[in-house]
Length: 153
Ligand SMILES: COc1nc(N)nc2c1ncn2[C@H]1C[C@H](O)[C@@H](COP(=O)(O)OP(=O)(O)OP(=O)(O)O)O1
Image (tube, rainbow, N blue to C red; front, side):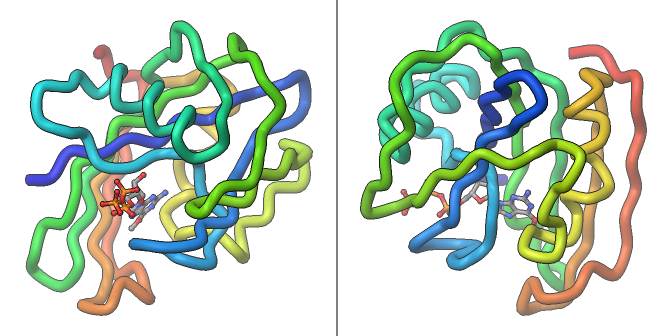
């Protein structure tokens, strides 16, 4: 299964999301992230992806969750989810991503992957979670979900 990451910088009551400009989820608001490369740990990949996508340097990201998603019957990715309040550099738009801060009390769930509304509250409250989500073959609609909280990593 393809491992991948998401890493969310948090600043007080705000969270940094990107408008994804290419690849899986193009056009959606997501966290900075992407596939883990050979020889990388998920944490290293999370740090690299934030730097590549929005030119922000992240330190000590904390893993708060993980989830697997399936499109149809095919398992697509296993995603390690991090958050961090330790980062430097102003977020910049790149070929891959257009970053923007959002108020955590007003999350734009209508423009995000459907699973995000299930686990994002746990990420924001620093509660750990583990999920499994099955979408239709095109990834347009979520058909089944399982979510557990309070897991140990
Ligand atoms: C299906 O539900 C999903 N929910 C959320 N929140 N995030 C998702 C979902 N499916 C994919 N993602 C995220 C996880 C990864 O961060 C990226 C994968 O995107 P991509 O395949 O474009 O990965 P990159 O390494 O950036 O792409 P390149 O191969 O072009 O470098 O999407």
